[in-house]
Image (cartoon, rainbow, N blue to C red; front, top):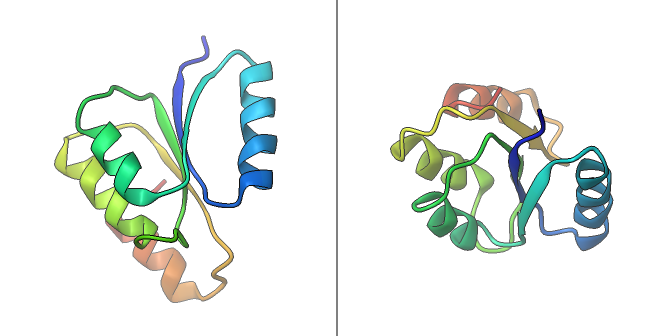
Length: 98
């Protein structure tokens, strides 16, 4: 059964493609381009999963992940990023990404 996905991605073209595909599979997608907006949303909304870009215009995506964990949200997190350093991947996993 599809669920609610929070999509946090500032590249509109990529966000549109992801949203179209996910909604086509029956998921309810809420999209934000900025991390601050996503963090505020997480304070009041229930989600089933999050797709998160690390390179956001107003903050590092790991800050959004930290806000999610502060809300005791256990939804899985898929990180999308242009960062290719091993340290970036390790940091995301240590912060709670899946």
